[in-house]
Picture 1 (spheres, rainbow, N blue to C red):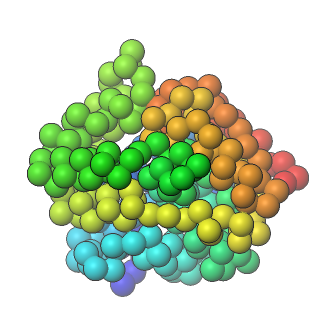
Picture 2 (picture 1 turned 120 degrees about the horizontal axis):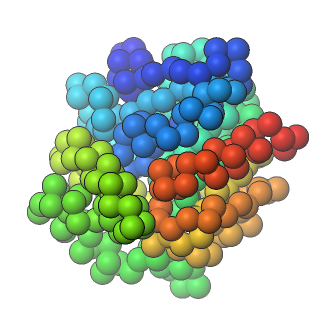
Length: 267
């Protein structure tokens, strides 16, 4: 299957610049990058895409069994790189897509020059001294609500994820993105996301990495970004002064500036 059609690929920006592959998180699609594509596209070639089961991806590519864990999404990232004949890729992954990038880079580090992990979480569940932000009861309740009334869940959860109540239009934008996702696909993707545990994959990363966290984030709370940065050898940690889980939406200028500084820097 052609990856361009499978993943609704769009390539914009400077055709001769470094290549940034922008990967969206759970429930979203590539439109959530639109506030940073201007400044990034002025310097880099941007590869935007939708995960299978999201946005404008090919519905025929969906397989509930295959996409029940994050490994399949990492496979798709590598397929995208091969299918588009990309090299020296800077992978920018938001939320759960950050761990897709970690998995893909661990499998084939030579395909990547840098990783940018935006609001990453290697595990959403609390576990001993590790504080992921959710108890198992929290996750079970979230999944039950999502499975019983996905559209209602999307409208209710979007303001919490966006985290900027003074700008309700941003939560509305996120909710619309959620509502463009097939509920059946979203249910599978949610389980793959919220029950994942990629902590053991972090020390294996050998690609220069920036961890970009939000100052106040209920989905990836304080300490998670530092946990990720501490366990990836040589990783840098930067904090965007914004609330919520989507800094590319709530603080696009600061997010773009941090990405540019890292991509153009020596690291």
